[in-house]
Amino acid sequence: MDYDVIVVGARCAGASTALLLARQGRRVLLVDKASFPSDTMSTLYIHQPGIARLARWGVLDDVVASGCPPLDTVSHDVDGLHLSAPAPTMDGVTSTYAPRRYILDDLLVRAAVAAGAEFVERAQVRELVRDDGRVTGVRLRVADAESTVTAGLVIGADGMRSKVAELVQAPVLRSAPPVSCVYYTFWRGLSTGFGFHERVGRWIARIPTHDDLTIVATYLPQSEFAEARSDPAEAYFAAVKSTAPDLYENMMSAERADRWRGTGDQRNYFRAAHGPGWALVGDAAHHLDTISARGITNALVQAELLADAMTEAEIDHADSVDAATSRYAQNMAQVLDEPYMSTLELANLNPTKARLRMLHAVSTSPELTSRYFALSAGIIRMREFMTADVVDLL
Image: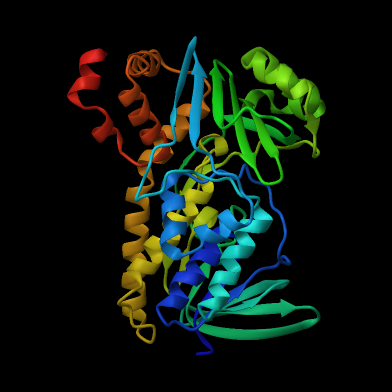
């Protein structure tokens, strides 16, 4: 074997996985078809469970040092309510962050290399190497040269359109149709902070990031994507003006700092995340509508789940590796089930009467409002949120 593990894809899921496995003393090869640092489509936000992991891994200090602003408060306007609270805390972390991806992904790659991983950029996976049905390596193309590299485990962290998932024919185990679409851009000079505006058929997000820039993202029903794509500016401004008029006025005196970015490809699925000699992490394994901004956080959670499962695995023993990746897949499906279901509900852009009753109830109490934002962030589960004091208000 040339390596213990090959990780295909070096964005936040792959680089984090490589970092954690390298810290276990594994011989890790991390490859990506892109060059680094480079950008990718993303709404950038990392929830507290993701920030807490970056802190544990020693990467959060680098994010802070990069000039990414801390997001210390959160607000949510819906049905005549204005919910606002300090950002909920987790494991001593008191702020969230939304770093630009060309910064975050590069920091994670650098951390993986510092831990001992080898990184090759502009490397394209052509095919997988197999031995008696088991994945044992990859065929790589770098520049004009091709080579075969072998490993005890090949991990696909190469996104929603994963080449590794395609080559192993990983089946989709659960899915739901796309129900929203999104257009966003960056604004310079907004001082609106982090938060959301919601009404039937619309969801607007405000996400501050590096360089005095703020993403303003507009979510519309999937049925409106064709019309929005024909005139993104019209659809975008109409959505903001009708949902968040004060934000719209602020945007009119700010500077649009980027082109329109959008997609209707809001897939929702869990793929089979393991098989003989292979595993999937990040969007390769699981993708959900971006409206809940769970993508980066989920990627970091998955990386840690896989690394934890691999802690005692003997890389030279196929049964040991496959048992570890099987545990990872089971744990991943369990941990990410509730965020998946809540995201599907949110992405329908049609707040239910029960949810609106709950929001009106929690708005009467600063403590319950804070707990609601902790629930939204994934710090607590619904069963922890729905205590007797909440139920009594409904």
